[in-house]
Length: 85
Image (cartoon, rainbow, N blue to C red; front, side, top):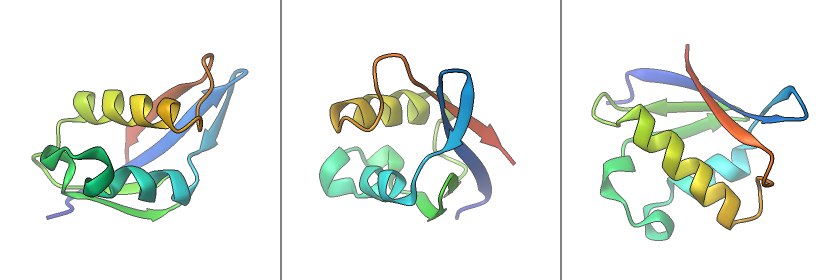
């Protein structure tokens, strides 16, 4: 089910930092995001997320970036970087 492994980082002032597990956990709770397309996401550590094969990467990045901004985790100038590992 969680066949793909991702590195999830945010860029701030030219530096890539791993997203804290707290952020990833918060996003992955469906009762908050209310998007079933992201049910197959499993946060495993800071900057590490495992996802199912049916999770669309582009939508995941957009949704995570939006959610992190709404929660004030990401500032206006920061951006999210997802990398398959």
